[in-house]
Amino acid sequence: MDQKSFEALYDRWAEALYRFALGLAGHEDIAKDIVQETFIKVAKNQDFFKKAREEQSYLFKTVRNALLDRSRKDSSWKKRGERWGNDMGLIAPVENPDKHEFATWLERALAELPEEQRSVAILHLWEGMTFAEIGKVCKISGNTAASRYRYALDKMRDQLRPLYEEIKS
Image (cartoon, rainbow, N blue to C red; front, side, top):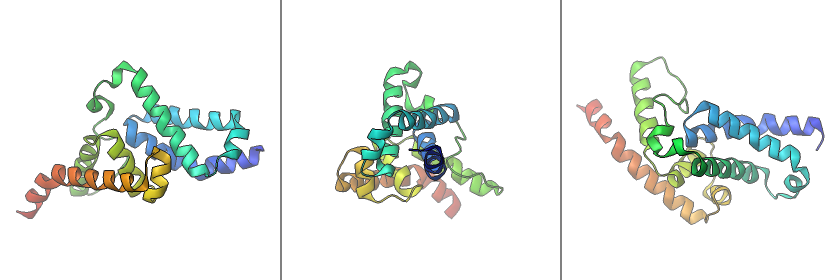
């Protein structure tokens, strides 16, 4: 892969990979490190990358695996809540205080999900991947991805219900 092709690959995928890493890790520095490690891996293993059937699956899978490896090794990631800041930035900043409050609730609800459900929700909602594509990234079937997505939505709905009730009344 020449430099121009590598730059095009980076331009095409870096932002989406960063959002995904940020959504799973909850820390900007970790997300940046993981994305950088992913592209270093691609640069070092160009032959393997060229053989990968789908660059999207390969890249997202590499990010997810790197984050899972880091979370297993890093003792500071003992609890999911420790990984997430109050405003991790997955939801775009907004001027309206009500929208900001909703974004905060949404991020909190997302943070409460188990990693396997959070991965599926982020990939489907923010990256627009199909369940078949998500299955390739997460090494599960498309049906399992769809099921995890439904569980994620149910849990998020339960987390957001108090806000809905407050708004409704």
